Length: 447
Image 1 (spheres, one colour):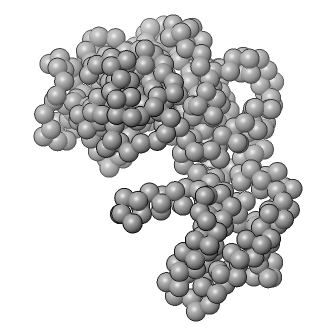
Image 2 (cartoon, one colour):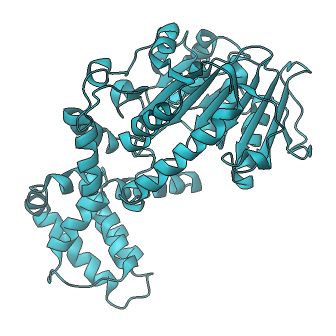
Image 3 (tube, helix red, strand yellow):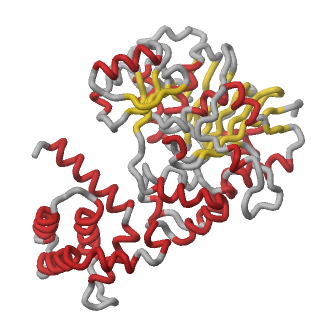
């Protein structure tokens, strides 16, 4: 096998095993000779991978068993290979019957933690079933065409000439969905900044912010920089753009993304991140500054000049993008959610005074939970009489309603007495997009 093929297979095994871990682990317990039998963590993990190959991948049974047993020989446990062999052969014989018993528990069948299933059902009602199913699917492959490099139609033609089928396009084909995932190295013009990989739902952030020439823009919590780059593609003549992230290492990714797109950047200290030449005609008055700092502590980085536009892509549970990050099912806990919501409200409260009168703040989150989205923004609006929700109006100017299920989200919200949703949300899997939430807030008067 080639190294690239090996890496691809390893990635596929890892992601699929994580995606179905809770279901497969329940099956593993039923396959054990004793229900309370203890297993070394590495033996348990390898057994899950073997079961995943048997039940969720197209690996021939003999190959799945042989390769997993061979891997077990290298674990350093004397009887690991024999145990794994016996377990997988029993799964081959009795797996369907035992799996049917596991699936009688709907939570295990959907391979999600119980707390998350309950939360999604409360927040989404009948739509929760579709979200849970979407979370277990492979993510689609969306592209964002750099309009400074050519039109969407031109890039679509380049893709088709390269044998890559396009199955959907939005915004004059600047947002394209490929029929199959591709290596970025195979995308025409990727290295030179002609295109980026970004989900269609995430691409709405920059369009909702709608930066204008000469304006001062803040991108808070900017890493890894996909939305930052899109802002500059849509409006390269911004007066200035400040991108903040608490992690210097993650800010390096923002710099790399912007440099690939051809935008020169500098640190808050003025030290340049890289020596890559600008390959786009960026106006000299456009200034892009990256600062490693806590956005919620503006006293440590803000120069006192207000911003015309603020993009606040808050840190969240990422429960709307589980299909891209299936480990979220295992790592996230119910008790994390109120802590995250408190942080999100803090960011919103601390950054709002930095917005100019008449300015716009876009609150973005890839959480599927109302606690981190509607509830946070609603709490802020209740305490701030100079902010108003203009999300629906701004979406109307975009002429975009793909995946925005107004029949579900403009009426009553299950479990919420107010019955009115602040902002708008997209259910994971709807129209091929990730789960997302947006609220466009306008400052109506001076501070």
